[in-house]
Image 1 (cartoon, rainbow, N blue to C red):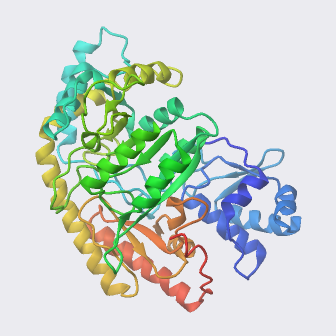
Image 2: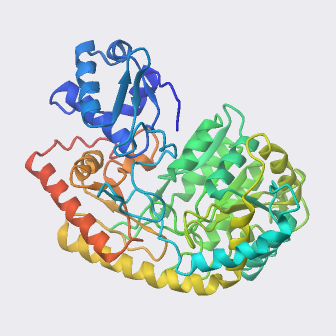
Image 3: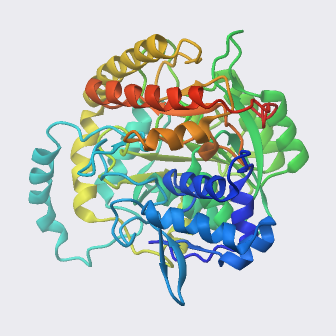
Length: 512
């Protein structure tokens, strides 16, 4: 559970353009409700006092009180005299069980919970068939680890060897001492952010991007430098704005860059091979460390080209250590550092909290030393399960590809029939569609959808400073029935907006 006290100034920044021309208290309540439902305000966050927020927003205390009262009635706020007003999520009781920062909903691997709400805020598939049997067999391997302390900050040797072998098969020679096992990919990103970023350091990120990575970097004190990634448009243009990306590296000299080069979340784009080399070389010249988040990297549906792991495009990888002790030589004769993050959360099951970092051994040792300040290691049993499953990854990926192809094609057909005015770029992998609504109403649509039993994150969840109001991320990794139910709910919500049209102000249109 979050226990954050939010200042009036911080809440004002998150609210963005919340005034819609109607009742001020209702507009304020609606925007706070959306921030809570899509995870931008986490459960347990303490909101500013009514008088303080009123002064900041230029409202009367009575108006703020009315907004808070409406949120309490909707189950999104709890207030205790002397303790203030605390964000909660529907169905979570006191809110103590919701600390992930994700929107409210059922547990991992399920799109629907007891509340009847269909949760599409999580782009993850249900558990791979047969996982329980593998877990039972893995438990038999546990006995040989019981004489030890039960925790290891770097990972058990057999799993590190299996991960290294998987990289070798994919075209990137890797030794087990280049692998550190983490508690999922998010843990890996947060650890890297703490090690590399000091307060005020510039960090390059994609725009849009994975929200929890942005949160981890911001929490470390980073000054974010966003670079655009676009989904395929009508003119065929798509992908990374390479001139802007290279200029950002040269002009901002960031200490770190966070990229999702394969099946980018949320746009589904893949960075071309030649562009990967140019970006790595440009980062090397500036001494910028690149984090390649490859959690989606092997989820190809029908991508025609074969891609190696991002780090393989650093010429000389895994060559001699660079002058920082853990970089690899680039073609420009300067050290290139590409650190890779991976996990099984998208391929096997999100509830199996196993991720990893691939880097040079000197950096692995530095990360291990930093890790013990917050946790002592990754659970052994889960490591044993993944050790057994990694050799079967080709068959696992083939099965997932079939499931995702069916889901993607079904969703595209449903959206085309129901919303011909929307633009739905065709993707060849990953888990999500980055849908262009044609109007800056994503937040309103997400809020209206909640009233029809659908939880879906608004576009600004993936942007910085309120961008992407014209976009909605819709995952296609759920079953056909759930997809049909989701599109029905979106249709009802969209109809509500059409009956009560909002002015198209062009808000943030230039950004997207």
